[in-house]
Image (cartoon, rainbow, N blue to C red; front, side):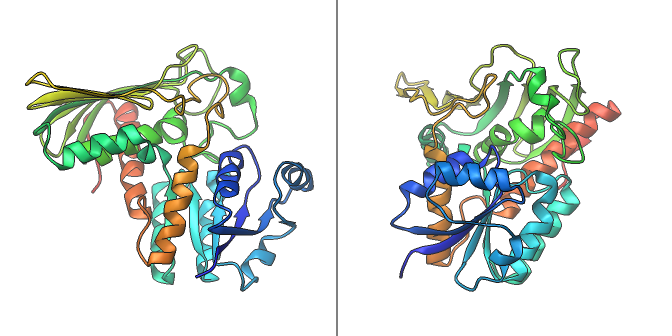
Length: 342
């Protein structure tokens, strides 16, 4: 079986780590075309990466050579582009979030399933070695039942970040710190600790930012397992810090801090994975991280197509974090406990 023939749609800020990953995967993937409606972006992309560009989405949809499309456009365009790709029989790798609203995200997931194409979602924190090791330990019951889980996401974005047209708006991005930044850590949390049942707390926009959506969240959560915990998220914490997931378990505790893992067992054993510099992006430059985990997402997506299986993060998996974010926003808006939709 030859290389997977893939096209890229969207050549803005988000494309860079993916394009670097595709260079690394050149023996497995052939980039047939890269498209942006902006001629300037096509030229800028072509100057940095040795991939052919094209000037229309139709050229990609109509090209029978292209088996899959990687979409890195603004969230509000994901549904339309993804469904067009599915209708053309092309597998889809979608940058997070799936869409700006859960109903639109559900329509995208449903459309890809009905078309018989694979839909993978770029939630790359699941591919960090530290998180993968902790997932293995939990699956093997090495720590016992989880009784507490708390998440801290303290990032920094200056006002210039939100001054870009559309950024931090419901119409283009679908939300603020939760949907744009926190979604990665919340997805990883759900994959480790299981579904959240109920949330109650506060969501606000601080005086540090002029923006439509939220930049600070403080919420208490109850998991379906009975565990309790907290979610704290902000883009107003200068200069930005690695996100953390802390698990309190029956036989020990575990802490993920960026790409670092520390597990302390009650019997005295200790396991650690040292930080490797791959968990940047917490500060003013949101792209200050290497492309290792994006490459892993792409490699898994390619393997899933070749092996006839689902990618590690499917559309259905991504919908879980969308529904959690909906509940977090609702509790802040309504001032009452909110159940997370199943």
